[in-house]
Amino acid sequence: MRNNEEHNLQKSMITWFDMQYPKLKLCLFAVPNGANTSQRAGAYMKSEGLRSGVADLVFCYDGVTTFVEVKTQKGKQSDTQVNFQDQMASQGFTYKVVRTLDEFMELINGLIKGWNTYIPCGGCHLQGSRCRSINCQWTMRDTI
Image (tube, rainbow, N blue to C red; front, top):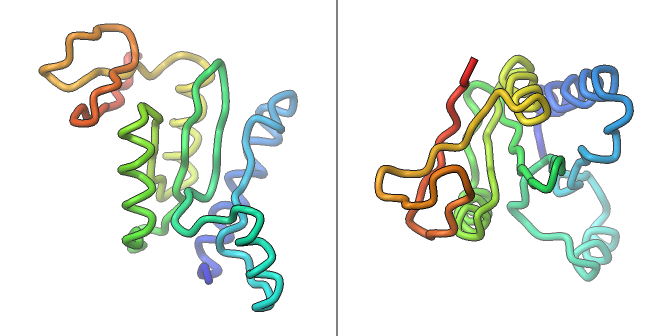
């Protein structure tokens, strides 16, 4: 189960997003992996496809899906979260761990307003497009 600090942080992110981008509300949604449910309800949700380790938030915008893991300053990803991150990266998706509301705001504003560009690893030959190489690690650079 998630701690209250992470819950409050994620709640503030959703509140900010909904106020900042009301027309895009359906583009950002939570995955209820940390939900406090009964054993029966948990089994029911797992039978419907709930997966351990999936990122807390999913943001879909302009044909790009970004997975966002919410952690406190001292929070650490679990092994299943790291595995999910690795699997998504190997498929070319963006995954970001955010630890503050400011980090989240910078990420979302950058994705929506085009402030961030994705720079492939030094050996990548696909300038300006998404690298599909399993070994390529994307880095985000603020271009303003």
